[in-house]
Length: 475
Image (tube, rainbow, N blue to C red; front, side):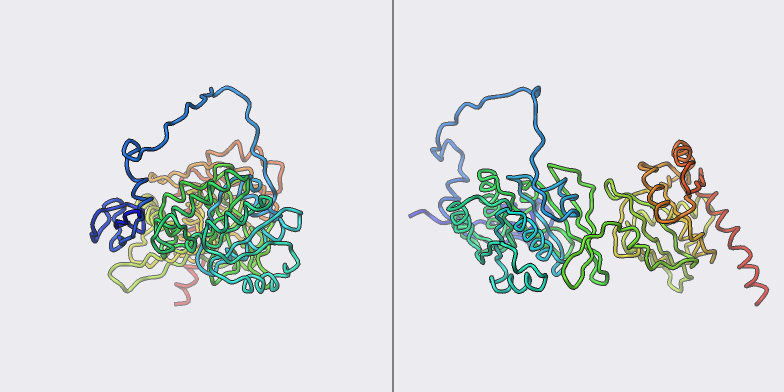
């Protein structure tokens, strides 16, 4: 009988220790180390090959860089927004890991993609480790997908799953919901632990590579928004997708964090409806549908998410504070970036915000991280402080440097074309993008260039002076 032992494994990063300790030296997490039983097989595999008595390696054939390589074949899932993020479709033999907050719609998205692919004549297997088959059928019936020929199973043992699939034709798509509920006989720890998640994922990845089936693994996320389990699983899979959204909004964003077969800066936009997730072909129009025209503190930002131009509304509220330390509340943008813009406004433009609370919000629940939003954020802040409303038909984009200069950004023509398509007549952009202005001269949108942030602040302040004078006279 194989001798059993115990090891202490960090549940955050997978580091192994011979005894328990309060802090993991590898990732710095506290109280994340748990004891796990390890069977003889695992202990045997942890020994060096010389002591293991393993087989002798075979000689590999080495090839040169020169040669012809065909593009990876892809299978369309039937959901265009999902295919966009995946790089054009599902690659046979690939493994995708998708994570998101509970209730965000991960299972809904995957059952819709499974039904669309099954209706196209492909074999699709949906394995749920969290719900019974009857529960999955209820969701499919609510979405109007009960007639789709998707094969269902409620199982958590990966050996049984692989044996069942190997008995028939390999599926085009295998969905595992979720990887944290799977367990394997090769590891004796509880499901959801680092050892079980890593071992189960390795077996499923090996099956995908051998059979050519595309496998999608659903992963739970921690309170910080990171996919739970060992980080090594994210390195093992071919793509890592994040399903984001705000419970107060109906919009959902599918974003690629890693993709071996496509770009990592594409997004897919969905809207949660009573019949499931609906694709949003023109997200800019949806994000701007209920914006406050003519209100101080709002600016329209012409941004880019991957190759898709996206227009969103930036909302700012600047109010005097009664606290010793003013508040800086940010939703949908980087708080460190906001601190930098506030510092540049005070140091280079003379805009004093040290005695004011600053609240910044990206309307629609979208999160942006592009530096090109600096100019729109600064315009919204100055507009709120001065009480001067920005033109309702203008969009803003440009990066602000620490010297106060406005620097050009990429994809200028795409931003301007999207703004012109939605009826905007003006675009405030960096002065270094004169070539873009000449290229867009034949369109219906007029371009206004600024070389420094001080120019924009002076223009907005001049627009707000009459209102300020009127207020002083009324008083």
